[in-house]
Length: 142
Image 1: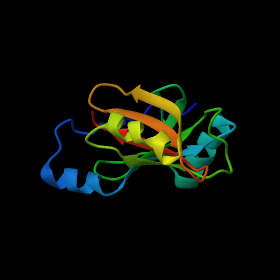
Image 2: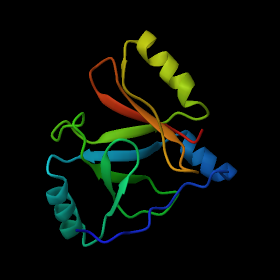
Image 3: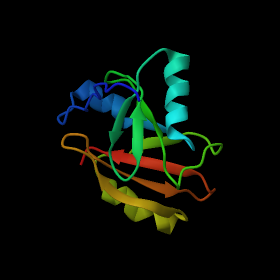
């Protein structure tokens, strides 16, 4: 089993520079794993690092080391995320995750995971399928 590593949490009040970075970029990624332990061993061996195991939301994750404001990401074991379909990007939905979720279905998409709260200071997320069948995540600080 991998050692526990520290997972940096976003600063709840973002500096103007950090907010500008967040406004126009991917904020997170997830790499699906069918065999979670095997995938963790693979990435830890390939990158000579330790991934931090955690449970945020409904699925177990193993977070790659990073320091804010870098983009963070993880391995994830989830029945709805299948390996071979590609990594799952999370796009910024600030200032309101609910507003973005409210526009998905009328635009031709489908919500596949509703708003899910993260631990204090980390915001919330959801997942949707776009009009082309791609799975995309969204994240907001509130």
